[in-house]
Image 1: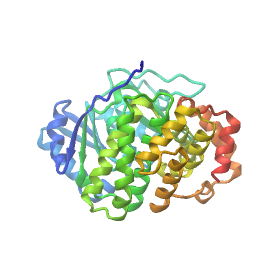
Image 2: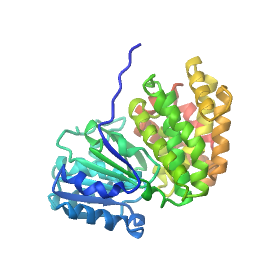
Image 3: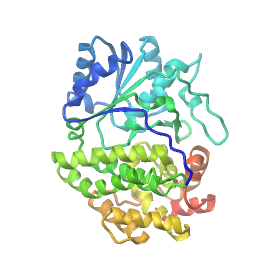
Amino acid sequence: MNFSAFLPRTFLSFGKGVLGKVGKKTSLHGSKALLVAGEGAMKKLGFLDSTKKFLEQSGLEVTVFEGVEPNPSVPTIDKGIFIGKNSDCDVVVALGGGSAMDAAKAIAVGITHFEEDDTIWNFIGTSDREPKPITSATLPLIAITSTSGTGSHVTPYAVVTNPETGEKTGMRSEFIYPVESIYDLELVKSMPAKVTAETGFDVLAHAMEAHVSTNTSPFTAPFSLTAIELVSRHLVNAFENGDNLEARQGMALADTFAGIAITLSGTIAVHALSHAISGNNTEIAHGQALASLSPTIMTLNIEFGDEKTKKHYSEISTAFGKDANPVSSVQAVIELSKKIGLFKPLSELGYSNKDIEKFCKDTFNASQRTLSRNPVELDKSKVNKIYSDCL
C-alpha cells in the first residue's frame, strides 16, 4: 500500500475559555498584530474587543482590519494587505468564520510578497495562468474560529472571490497553515441557527468529499468517517438549540476532523461546482450551494463510479447510521438538509438555465484541480447536466 499525506502543522487549543490564550500564543510569533475580522458579529458580541485586549495585555501592538465580507473579495484582501504593510505588522490574527480566516491567510501572504501595483489574484492559479509563488516569507497566522465551520483553522487553503469575473477559487500552500488555532466553544455558541446549518453542511461536505476523492487513503478514513458520524449526531441539535454545549462541541470536533480530511485528500466536484454558485452571487452562502448540489453529484458518482467509489458511499451511509448501501447515503443527506432548512434547488436561489453556461465556464477555469479529484470524470456536458438537474 502506497500513499502520501500532507499533514497539518497547527497547534490547536480547544475548549471553553481558550480565547484567553491568544495573547501569549501570538506573542510567540510577532510583536505587531493585524487583527482581521468580519462585518460586525464578533464586534457586536464583544469578542473583537476581548481579543484585542488579550493581545495588548501580552505586549502586542494591534491594528484592526474589520469588514471582511462572506466570500472574501480581491479588493477587500488587497485593502487589508495595504493596511498591514503600512502598520509594519509581523503576525496576522484571524477572528471569525471561514471568510475571515481565508482573508487573513491571503493577507499574510500579500504583506510580505506584494510588489508595486500587485493584487492577491496574482497568487491564485486558474486554468490559463500560473500563480505567483508563495514562500516561507508569509507572515505567521493565528486562527480564532467562530463557526463549525470551514475547517480553515487546520488547513493550508484560502478561498478568494474575484468580483470582476465572478470566479471563486483558492490558494494552497504549506505556508498558510495557521501556526496556532484557537477553538473556543463560547464563540461558536453565538452562531445563529441559519449560520449553524450552512457551516455545518460545509463540514459534512468536506468529510464526504474527502472520503470519496481520488486522493483518499486509509489515513483519511478515520477523520472523514468520524466527522460524518459527529455531524449526523449533533448538527440538528446544534441547529435547534444553539446553547446545547454537547452539540456545539460535537460539531467543533467534526469541523476539525473534516478540515484534516480535506487537507489529506482534497475536495471534489461538489466544491468545484459550488464555487461558481456563490462566486456569481456572494449573498448565497457556501454551505447552501453545497447542499443544493450534493445529492445530484452523489447520485451521479454512485451510478457511474467503480466498486471502490460505491464502497466509499456505503461507508458514508453507515456513518450516518443507515444500511451499508451507497444510495442510502444520498437519502441521508437529503433528510438532513430538510431538517436544517437547506433542501433548496438552484432556482430557489435565484438562478435559471441562462446561468448554466457561465457556471460551467467558471468551474473549468477556476476549479479544474478540484474537479479532477472527483471519482467519476466529468466533462463539460456532465457538468452542464448537473447544474441543470439541480435547478
